[in-house]
Image: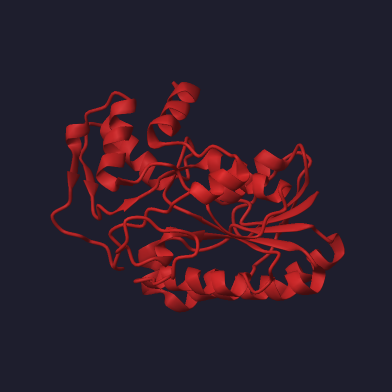
Length: 289
């Protein structure tokens, strides 16, 4: 199968490329950070300013699948620079959806738990979205657009972790604790941390099964950010007493308090296991100890 991956140099995109390169013909699109992998065709394209170049590439290559992992996920950046964020988080999926109908490919759009307001204990795929910050608004609008093509998939996920230098929170906790420094938690909301390997396996799973619609691609534990940090400390035999809640919340954008996504539908329909926090951290620890 021929698959074009947008954001191929990013955290999730690069992992999708590596996981699929032996079984599919992968074409990676990057914007700034060049990637070079054996057997992988890559193209540098500014997805906003030069979308016609991407459109022409898709017309020539005729992929069955386009995975859009490109986007701005820094919540405070999105709040501060809304015009720029809207272009990549909403306008790009809009343009991709238009040509998905024209060139008959399935678009897989990555989304977020932040499309919800955080007032429920657990969210299902068909719950009404109600974002409380601009990041969530830009992503919820993109979901509606993408699903106008009934072939397409929206994959919601949350707080990615794994052994990868691009993963911010996981590495922040480990690096601080290894130096016996405080880990300061600004916002202690609850969500479902997601092992990167699980998410990528799930993406290829829904491709193989030719699914469509919304799926929750998240881990199987609903926990607070502080508890997550404590779990990391305990697994790597570090001092969890250095993990503290920050007295001053320095964030710009408002955060929802509880965005735990139910992954029951995903597990039942795909038969793919999505790790609990203990299972996920154990996999990382065994692989890298």
